Amino acid sequence: MSDPKVQANNIEGQLPFDIVRSLIQNKKEEYNRESEIIELIAVSKTVQADRICPLLEKGHKNFGENRVQEATLKWPPLREKWDDIVLHLIGPLQTNKVQEAVRVFDVIHSLDRKKLAASLAREFDKSDRQLPCFIQVNIGEEDQKSGIRATEVDEFVRTCQIEYALPIVGLMCIPPADEDATPYFALLQKIAKDNGLKQLSMGMSADYETAIQFGATHVRIGSAIFGPRITN
Ligand SMILES: *Cc1c(COP(=O)(O)O)cnc(C)c1O
Image (cartoon, rainbow, N blue to C red; front, side):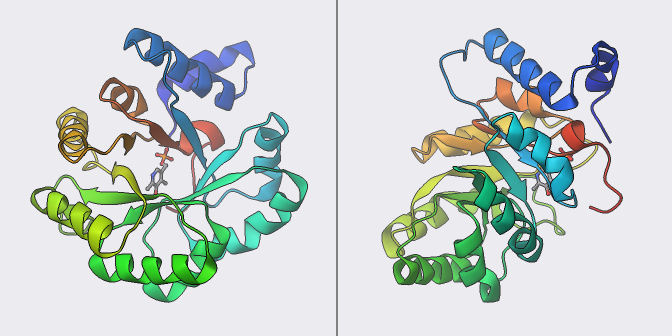
């Protein structure tokens, strides 16, 4: 599903990516956040390299993938050609894929359980790579979604920081589908503040403008940039 505003604006002949970027700029101004950096993560899952290259050619650096395997196939060749790419893992991470994930990605947005924290800590030591980590919060307390429950985030943050010495930079969430995301973004913002965490990974194609109102520092946008996906 692509953003109706993007489609409406598209008559100018601008690329959807440029439209998204300028909408983010508008929202920064509206919410008095001009001096802040809001990272636009272009979510390129299921998108082939030839459709990613135009963004790389414009100098865009931040991309998101949800599958370790797919990223491993797609990104090393692109990194040979373009420097300073920052690749974000936004999907669930199995512990048996941690080694590969730490090699391929630069930022983890889906730290959601103690076993994974332990596994990441071991791999960071072994590989001498410390990837900034976002803790994923199951903000709507949905059974089918992964993430730490809102009431258990404080304790999990401390466990990650003290027991595993992980570089926890912020919180990430995916609010319940087909609901107003506002209260969920507001809650994630509050939990992050209570824990002294500065970064918030929230907002997708349908709701990134609201997320910016509530302090998002990383918006993860796929279909509004690349068009609808056949699968996930
Ligand atoms: C696919 C995905 C996105 C992007 O979704 P769009 O609605 O296409 O913008 C963002 N975050 C996560 C975790 C995703 O899996």
